[in-house]
Length: 499
Image 1 (tube, helix red, strand yellow):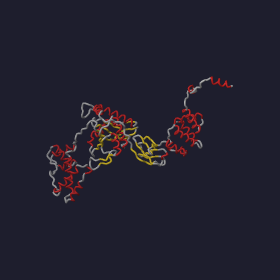
Image 2 (spheres, one colour):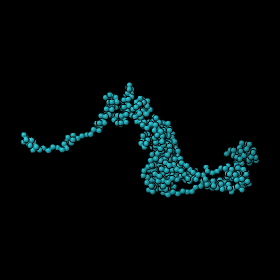
Image 3 (tube, one colour):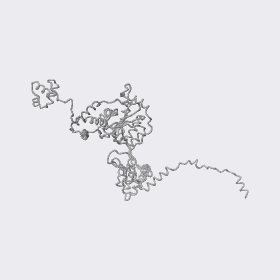
Image 4 (cartoon, one colour):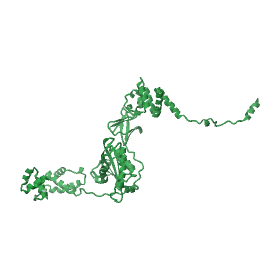
């Protein structure tokens, strides 16, 4: 403000614009702007030609207009550049400059796109007609660590009822699981689903803006629910504007300030309750006298029944290595040693990893979403341990094996003895054959009797199993004869008479 006043004072004193610029160290444009806004005097703007002439381009303008009309219907990536127009006109005999073509193309696009920019057609959706879907990225504190999560957004287009669920990834199996949970929450399924061109749903967008190649796994899910997919045009977020707006609203409503939870399940329970609470408080945008939840209650009765969830997973084929491990998503999971060096099918679920070979399940693990980890199940290596008992001492699968204290104590005592590895392995193999509870009881007996060897423990397990399986007999009933003899003294008299 001080500099602005100084400019006006110097101008009223009769100083020239150049002198003001030198004295105050400002540009000529700034001085002219201040003087013009204050109305001290009229300073005309820089001259601009109202009509631009194209002497050499004039006879080719109708051809260029046809090219521009054609390209204006295409998406931005498919439109030709001004250089391309210039080259094509040169092939037809045009001898003018490229700059003339560039200026004409620029003005044409400004004229024909500025009229439509920022204006949209209002959309209408019937009850139970469609839902809209989108992903967003949010930041929370998970188990004391700042973590970025992926939030799946659903919104019923008629009632405006929304549902959100959080994951650590944005992969296809997460997409399938999100749909199962959303339809369960809504209590039914709509006829259509509106998506953008995300890679987990759309494999390819063709030249025509309306032609799509959907992912086959994604189509399988939609066929399961009998949903017709609709993909928005590229860069046309207004076609699913409800869920686009929801992304910003949910961020303001629920994620500011930053949320803190110990597990992802706790976060999702919180989000589910908040979705119900907000929908009961906020009025519907179109039906002003009702809340979103009240309109949703009416729409829910028209939704198609949600019967069976879609068993969605991502499946890839891997070859197990010689250490009985298969790789998936930068982690390695163990399988039964019988299937080492064989091809297996890995099925990835949001929270589980299941491994199949020849149609039989050979391993199942909780999914690890970290990187470069080994997820080992010691039971997968027991058969191999029978042939290589020495691996018990330093075998990685057995390093942090969570076993009852009595079994660990027996194992440590046996391993400390000369040649005790084999006996320790025999005790561990009993876990596979008899279960943890039976082996734990037998180890407690061995410790209390101070007779710690594999033969005593195996015999104890066998004796316990026999006692457990022995039938309980009712003595009074079982001593009764099924066919009691009938006393007949005549037979005895006949024998005496023969004497």
